[in-house]
Amino acid sequence: MAGPTTAERGARQDRQDPASGPPRPPLLERLKRLPKPRTLIVVMVCLALLAASGAWILYGSQWTRVERVSATGTRVLTAAQVVEAADVPVGSPLISVDTAVIEARLLRKLPRIDSVDVVRSWPHGIGLKVTERRPVLIVEKGGKFVEVDAKGVRYATVSRAPQGVPVLELTVSHTAGLRRFGTDRLVREAVLVARSLPAAVARATQVVKVRSYDSVTLELSGDRTVDWGSGEKGRAKAHTLIALMKAAPGAGHFDVSVPTAPASSGS
Image 1 (cartoon, rainbow, N blue to C red):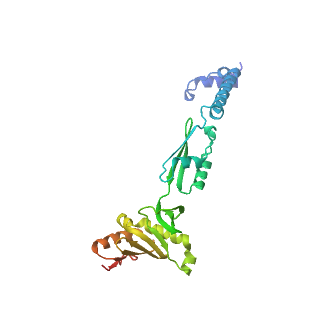
Image 2 (spheres, one colour; image 1 turned 30 degrees about the horizontal axis):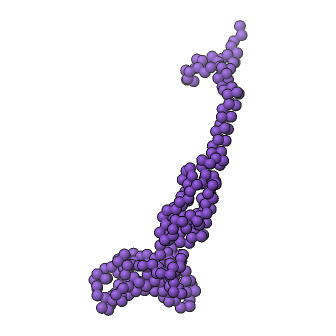
Image 3 (cartoon, one colour; image 1 turned 180 degrees about the horizontal axis):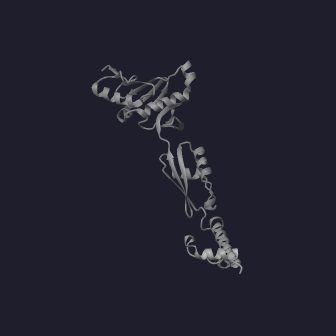
């Protein structure tokens, strides 16, 4: 009598081998359980219709088109100025608005803006979140004032000096030092000094005078002056200056260019 065929042995093993888990149905039965071609076609058609509907809602319908543009965070600029400069295509599909292009346009048109975040506000809005530059120094020029921010950027010219912002004076001769560092570098050095000043000293500072990279002088209210030196070691110089002013409140001149060897003089 002939023994079982290979197929019969495989089927028997599938049914009897406990290590392989519960017995599996024969291959023909498993094939019968697969979705029929008609079912697959219906599913694919439904998915295609959903995708087409979604695309139409985003790009073709009136439900998600730009109807309003708003601006927040303005301080000197007005919201209307920002919205006008942004030139957002009202009526366009909200999804198609290129936010990076709008951001670049605003930074180019309005130098007073330090950063801007353009966000979609579904279903009909575009929001412009603006951060304006703030002056830490001003440069007098032709009866007007150029504002300089904390990055050393000269970004706006105004007819009236902003209150509480020191005037930057560059009294640099055409020396090797100027050729080496350049005016922009010296302006950034002055900005670094202005940012390092203690709050009380910053409020009293009227002029930041730069003669060279390592010679920055402050003119304070009450005819007081401070030799600050370079912009390096700003925190140490700030602490030293506060201590020096407390120790010699009547002094008219302070030298913290070397913070470990400060000096004061005058009365």
